[in-house]
Structure formats: C-alpha cells, structure tokens
Length: 623
Image (tube, rainbow, N blue to C red; front, side, top):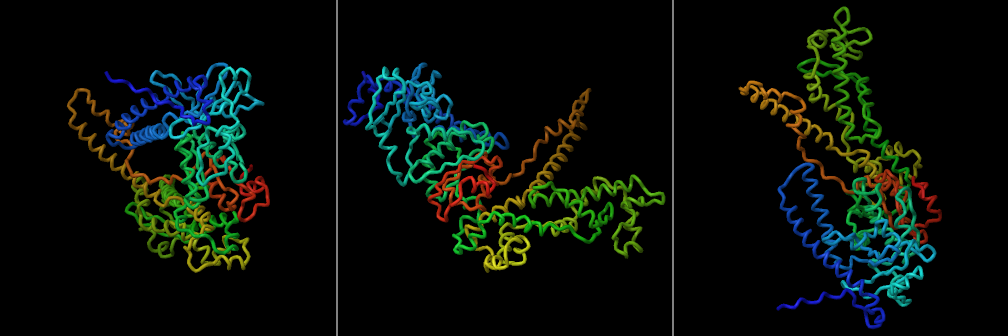
C-alpha cells in the first residue's frame, strides 16, 4: 500500500541557530503553517477553476462587461498573490490574553471558514507592528519570521510582559532581523513588511487627510514605508479605495518604478498606480532635459501655469458683427448680443472643447425662444413689440438692403417656429462654421508652442515677465519639448479638455433618436396587427416602457487616461526635486489634497533652503 509522504517542514533553520530548532519552540507554528499551506493549495485550485469559468463567459457590453472584467481582475490578483508566496504569506504571530494570532500579507481562511491569517492592514493586526515595550498594546509576545525560498530560516521573539516567557520565547540578539534592519540600502528594495517598526507603522497607518511628510536620508527606509502606506490606505481607508479614486505613486524615473513594482504585490495590493511626471502627458516620452538653467528657472515658476488660461481665452471671443441664417422654416438674424449671451452659457471651469457644444446649443435656444416669443406676443401692427422686435421685425443691425427691400421675405414669410426650426438651426452649416470660428478647437501643443515662438503672445499671457525674460524663452522650434514644458502642456490639455466629447454626445443622441424611430415603427406595426379584445399592444405607447425597450445607445467610449485622476491620495517620492510648476500637475490630480511627501532636503540637486512647510504652502499644499 502506498505510503503518504510526510509534509515538508516549514522551518529550515541553519546549524548556527540550532537552539531555535527546538520542537518546544516551533511545533505549534509547524502545525499552523502546514494548515496555511493546505489552505493556499485549496484556494489556488478553486481560484483557477473560477477564473477559467469567468474567462469563458460570453462577451457582454456595458455594466455587465465591466463587472466581468472586475471579477477577472480580482480573481487574477488573488491567484498571483497565492502563487507568488504560498505559505510564506505568514509574517509572524502575536500572543495576547485571547490567544495566538497569525499575521499575513493577506487574510486567509481554511475550507471550514477558520481564520488562519489576519491581513496586516486590518485593525486587528495593528499591535503586531505598533507594540513597544513602553506600550505593549495588550501583547505578551511577538514573533517575526524570516523566509528564504518558502522556508523559515530565522525567527525573532520579543517579550513585552512576563507572561510571554511562558510561551517558550526564543530571544536572540544575533537574529538576522537585526542585521537586516541595520544593513545598507541595496540597489533593489527588499521585502521588509515583517520588520516594520512601531514608529514606521505609525506613519503607515496615519490618516489620509492632509499632507504627511516623510523626510530622511538614504537608507532610512522612507520609500518602503511610503509604499506600505500606499497599500494600507488603498485597502483600509474608506476615503481612498478604488471607488474614491485610489492611490497614485509618483517616482523619479522608470527603473525606480520597476523596483517599486517588486514591492507592492508583496504587500497584498496591486491597485496602486505608479508613474513618473513625464508619464502624465504624451509629450513626456520624448521630452529632453532643459539645457538652459535660466529657461528652466522661469518655467519652474507656478505662475507660468497661469499663463495657459489667457492663452486659451484669446481664442474665445464672440463675433462683433451680425449674420443672417436662412432656413426652410424661417430666416433668422443673429446679432452680437446673441453671441455674447451664448458665450456666457458654459459654467465656470468647463473645458474649452466641451464649452463649444454648450455655446452652440445656447445660441440655438436663444434664437428659437426669441422667435417663439415674437409669435406669441405680436405687435398691434402685426410685428413684434417695441421692446421685443421678434422674428418678423427689423432687428438692430440688420443689413440696410434687407431692411428696405427684402423685409417681407425675411420678416413675414416664416411660419411659427418649433422643433423643426431648432433642428434646422442646430444643423445649419453657416451657424456651425461661425461657432467653430468664434470658439475654435485648439491643440494643446500649439497653445504652449505659440508662447515660445510669438513674443507678443507670451507678453500678453505672462505680463510679469521682463522683456529680456520673454526673449530668453523664445525658440525656433515650437515643439522641441523639454521636461520644463511638461507642466504647461498638462495645464493646456486640462484647460482644453477632450475635443471629441461633443462629437460623441451628438453621435449618442443621433443613435438614440434612430432607435426611438425604429421602435416607434415596430410599435405601430404591433398595434395595427393586434387583434386581441383588450388591445394590449397599445400599452407599448407608454413612454416608460418605450424607454426601457430602447435603453442606452451603445456608442464606443474613449479609452480613459488612467493617470488623469482624480486620485484620492498621491505619494510623491524624491519630492525635494519637484519644481513649483511640477507640483501643479499633481495638485490637479488630487482634489482632496491628500498627499504623502517623501524626500530628503539635504539631497536636493538644486538646493532646498526652506522648510517643507514653506515649500508646500507656496505651491498650494500645507504640511
């Protein structure tokens, strides 16, 4: 009969630590870690099967497709975590009066629902990291494991109360943990979750409100602590989770982010987005360092970001002359006052490109409403009133030839305005061209590039610059982007918005209108052929039922910019290097103003004489 092999021991301590290999010290842990290994195997098999089912599910659209993709992402992330770590998900254990609790990178239960590991980010796990001899937080003792290739190769016990000595604690001042804490920083960040100290844990678990500054020299672990904080907030802070914007981690360069990517999955979190400042705008990939220190200094000023708004506003000027629109339903005069009123329609903060559609719709409404008022309240001689000339009177600014000779044709021949007129105005090519000239679609590259090639343009948009500074900022190639240009390009892109947004809205409206027309034809046919006594098909005329039958028109949505935000929390590493203008890129992505700022003022390449409070206050954030 086959012999069942004995389970592999979790502990593989070196000979120099033979005293720690005493069964009295590790037998309970061996049993518990074996249960963890079995639970991991069971969950890997279960998740693999569920993931296969989810991937084979038929393709869907809308919310169903989103839910399916989210489920696949959730299952895949959990499966990757379990396969990567296995039994060494376990960081250690803590003993208190209510028993022994094992702490893990993620929570874990067995098939019967018994809790084997408590997630390190949960409140129940906080004493494992936060307990000190001055504040034991209810702990008798704490044990941390050191893992190598899936085996425990060292462990370290700390006793906080005399009761902990009864738990057969192994106290070892030569533990590898102490050596690892004192080691110099290597080129690659190591996994240190099991060795987070109490003061570091206080930083990790601090609330997300406001700005937290972590300043320290090389090798102090500030970056790793910031990564733990990012993973903790994303999982545990109700104001930070994915549904509220999530966390963005900003690092100095791509190799650095590769190191970061090796740490985050080990913390049980794959939802933290990482990027460099150059990643925030498309032009960043090809941007070179700014070679002129004077140009770099001038563009680093946050006031340069403010120059973008007047640069765009120069293209938002209402016409000063009227125009005549001839439509099948009516001939309509558009005067400068109509343009001025329409230009006031967009709400403050509306992106430039989206505002163009708002202005066009407002102009159609203004014209149609004025014509309707004129029909409803005719003047006693058949024309509009003196106060409201109306559509059939001679408007102010009407061309003289029209006033004298063509008044009847333009003034009296039009029928009562209605929905047809509104559509005719909305589709009128002359009106659409006029709106496009008065409020044109712009390219962010051109908006910024013109600042560096048209001195008069720059002087008007940045009046604080001296003539010499304006000359210094000029260059022959408008689009020769440098890293100093990126904050302005980002500001221009945000100020302008999506140029295709209005087009997609119109396409969606047209699709819905076509679907309504098609459904109306179907309903008419069903009613006409209904031979039931109650005429039940007539119920299809109901607006609510028709709306349910039509649903939302399926128009392809744009690919979202994953780095556009808004984010609930932003972690900025090497923050001492950021200019005031670069800070504006991050502030624009974090309306909550919730930041973790990591840096070393002493290492700033361009000097950092002020305090963090002074620097952050100047850029619009308070430490």
